[in-house]
Length: 186
Image (tube, rainbow, N blue to C red):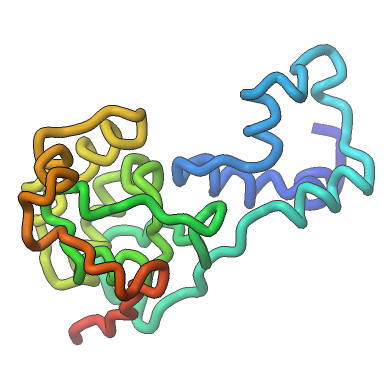
């Protein structure tokens, strides 16, 4: 493509991973808001300052987990912390109670958009890692997450928000510290 080093300097791969995981980057947010206009100059290389800014604003990712490769499928991208310091209430998804939410947080899964972007391989890996193979598919976590990520709701989410689902009640004692790192079963 006749621009050696540009892909690395502008962090195209890191940006693509985030976008594929259903997340935004500072650049994609600016494009969507209209702060950056896609015009004839859009293909121009970033300046060193712009590339440095981009790198500084990419979210930190979760490191690999022990025996990650021992599970079928592909691990979804995990963030070291929720965007803006606030996680979505994953308990609005049927099948995710306090314990599963903590386990997902331990993998860096904080937002509906992340689950909504999962592939079948991601669901397979998470199901295997958390020792509940097939549950994600049976309970349709991905389709529920897509609805919630788009600003919609589900019948289950309405029941949770009304306080009618005991397993999804949050006692407020753990907040963002609701994280459990699960050691996979051998």
